[in-house]
Length: 81
Image (cartoon, rainbow, N blue to C red; front, side, top):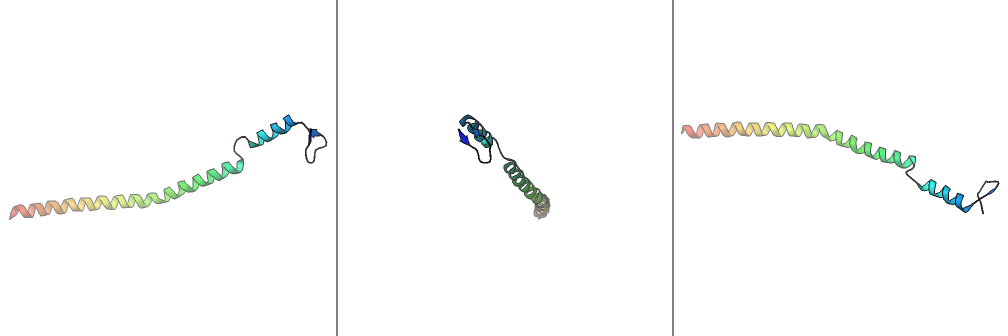
């Protein structure tokens, strides 16, 4: 028998093992909250980068379009000579 701090009666070894194993099982609320906070921070960061990526894709598309127009003009001018 083992005396538990603050208890008026001793607890058995089986009960102590049961209490310890139950307290170690699963995740604590703090661990879950921390994991959710880290995931939320990562998602917010990625969503913050989305407008920059879309703007870069738009500019790249315009540059490709401009390049195609210039190539066509250059080709047309070269065939006239």
